[in-house]
Structures are given as structure tokens and as C-alpha cells.
Length: 421
Picture 1 (cartoon, rainbow, N blue to C red):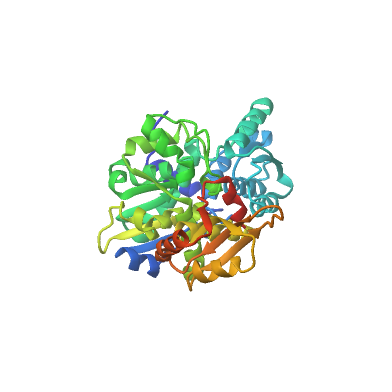
Picture 2: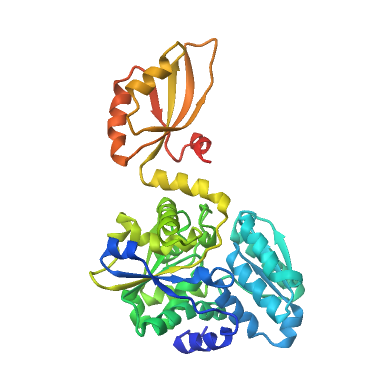
């Protein structure tokens, strides 16, 4: 396999220019103040398909000859890559079959159908991207259709690398630090190719979700490995195994790859919406989350006055998910806690709990109680939202001093699912 470099990315930029919109660099006053750097957000959520994935998909499909176009294409995607393929196929009149995992949000499914029109057939099945990818590969093998991988193809990688090329053109130089999200590694590998390996080791950082850290696992093992279990919340980057094409590019570059907790991503999604007015999907907020989360920020090599660019990679977020986003954010910030409370089945028990245990800023967010006529105590599941994470220790002390039995319910407990919206 030949190596990729800036010339490949430049050729991709020329090929995709008809369909891909140059996206702005937007200064974030919030993140600049938090970091002491000049933080710019690369707004790939403003692409026609609301994500950078259009770049790689168009680069591959626009480069196909007429015979390949007649055979059609097939792809698997968590949603954003599918939209890029759908738009490219609609524009170029290429038939496509697109496989989506069942976890793909409804909003993304509908957008794929709208963008592809009559050129696209959608197949929904499997729980993860990897399940959909296996089904897509089977169809391509059986029919001779051209497989358009979500990340594991040099043409895809070169197309995604145009994000970094565009940033350099807009700034007139390389940023001091470039933060990009990582799923299968296509965008990160493309950025390595665009800026050159010699600069990647100290200027490029990949961020992947802690619950699907497939690139971190690959770097640790020296080769791509399949994760047995992943958290699919950040669906755009929830990949069990990184690519055979992308991994060696990332490995050889020496760039840093770190993980971001899903809760921190949720906090940043809300901050982007409330402060910058940006609707970001979970994976789209991952790069900038590394700047707003204190634990992650402490690990980044940022100095005062540097120019830092974070890629907002996608804005295809289903509004119905915001309930879960708020819940995860509150838990990550230490403000949402859950308890199993054994109330004495006697008048006044709840009043004593409210008066003696809860603080003035503690709010009951959930209360599920079952009265047992044949028992002295009745269990209740209680969700509390605190005014501040610092209110937790006083709350626990009051619980310990109370005659009422209270047991914390950790976030990884099966009972915890009852507290999520």
C-alpha cells in the first residue's frame, strides 16, 4: 500500500470542490477564555450533509469510471457517511444501497432518504456500525457493486484530509494544535496526510469516546483489535475496530490519541448550544469537549496565546436525545445522583426525609415508591439533582445520620436505567 501525502489531499480537494462547501473557522470566546489560547471551531456541521463525511464519499464516488458507476455502490454507516454517499449518488446518478445499524437516530435515517432520493435503497439492521459493514460487504461481494467504506480506503482518507488542508489555507499556516474526533480513523489519518507526518506528532490530537476507544486499543496492541463491547452513545464514532488503512498512518505519525468521557461530551454539547448556538451531535462535540473538560484539558499541550482548532465534525443530532444528553451531563458534573431509600411505612416518614436529609438546593428529579401493606418498610428509587457537586458530601453525611436506610445507586447499576429519561 503506497503512502498518502499532501499531494493526494490536494488532488481530492480539486475533485470534490463542486459539491463540498468550504466551512468557516469560528472563534469561541468561551473556550478561548478557558484555555488561554485562541480557540477556533472548524464548522464542518455546516456542510450540506451537516458533517465532514461528504468529503471522503464524494472523492471516492466522483473518481469512479462509468462501468463502476453502472454497477452501483454500497456502504455502511452510522448516519453521516451515508448522507455523504447519498448526496454524491443523487448528484452523479449512481445507484446505492446503504446499510444503517438500528442504533442510527431517526433524524439521520430520514436525511439519508431525503438526500439520496430514488438513487438510494436503505437497509436497517444490526446493533453497531460493524454489523452494518459486514452486511454491506456481503452485498458488494455478491453483486459486484463498489464498496464505499466509511473510513478504511485511501480515497476516503484523502477526502477527509481536505478538512486540514482547508484549515491551513484559511489560517495561512498550521495551527499550533489541531483536535479531531476519531472513530475508524479516517479523519485523523487524512489530517496526518494533509499536514505531513513530521508535524503530526506535536500538532495533532485525536479524541475518541471513552466507551468506544478502538484506536487507543489498536495503538496499545500494535494492530487493529476488535472491542467486545462499546457504548454507542457517540454513534458517529462508535466503532469496534479501526481500519487497516487508517491505523498505520496514525501509528507512524506519532500523534497523540486520547479519550473523552461521554458525560464530558454531553456537557460540551449543551455548552455549544447555549453559548455558541451550535447544534452538535455527540461525535461533533468530542474535539471541543477536550478543551472544556478540566481533566482532559490538563493533558493537552496548550500554551498561552497558541492557536488551537477543534473540528466540529457533525450536527446531525436528533432533538429527542437531549433528555439523555442532559442526564449524562448532570451525572458527569457530579450534580445528579440516585439512591434506593427504605422508608418506614408510617405517617411523616417522607416529611422527615425532606426536612432532615435534603439540602436547600437539592431537587427531587425522580421519585418511585411502592407501598407494601405487609411490611414495615417500603422501597423508593429517588433521583436528586444538586445545586453543586460540592453539595454531595453534606448530603451523604445527613443521610448517614438519618434513621432512614439509604443506598447510593451507581451509574453502572441496572437500577440506574430507571432514572434516565
